Length: 109
Image 1 (tube, one colour):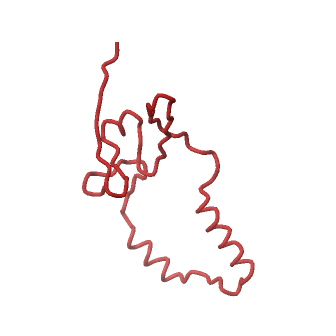
Image 2 (cartoon, rainbow, N blue to C red; image 1 turned 90 degrees about the vertical axis):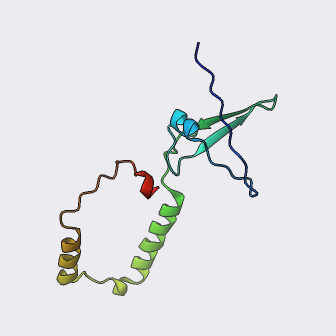
């Protein structure tokens, strides 16, 4: 039989709370993940990880639509990148390796 684990968190004045680490680990929650609540008739609330929607991010979609409309309406505003600028950017990031899938360390949280 599995061991029952209980944890608590506190509501702030704005009715917000931090999801305890043990719950985050159990549900494999990361930053910006969504939580699903099921409220049962007896008042019990079941907390689960919400499944990611297949749809694109609506905010990003709206921003990209805005850019597309702006480019179509004002193509004269488009400018090429200066070769010197590109070289400066490449020099600034030369040798920098980033693993976008690596977890953040505690100092970056």
